[in-house]
Length: 176
Image (cartoon, rainbow, N blue to C red):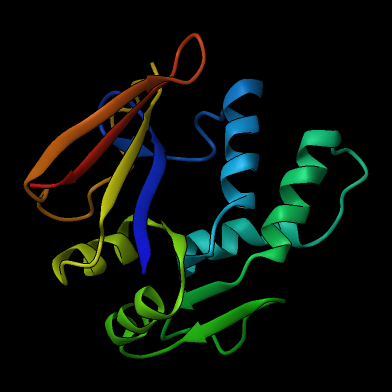
């Protein structure tokens, strides 16, 4: 049975914004290895459109970026969206009943399924489907933006901490 994990980089004040801060080399290496081991990923429309950046090779990329892109392209993706009409390679559009789709995937797959995007994570949290939350806490204060938790924070229990590089700590929580 698969485990559903919602994890993102977050500022000290609780916001996620890929344009405001990025992972350093050590944390990026962690993400490369993590994505290689996933059974797949579930995306909301907005974060999926951001991640489509990795669909096409870019001449300015270094070796770690090429590794990440290759791993990202290989994994199955499910995109929850009512507005998209199509999705890219190795992706399946889920236009309705994302909860039923995720329940089925959790039974059919082994390993971890990553959840990307606070809005889709909220609907899956509300349905009791998220098994673990990973906050990669960066020493940045944004003051506004998209919060990690798009709705009320669910009751959580701290499962572990790990220093990822000199400035970032991974906080792992499970539903209480």
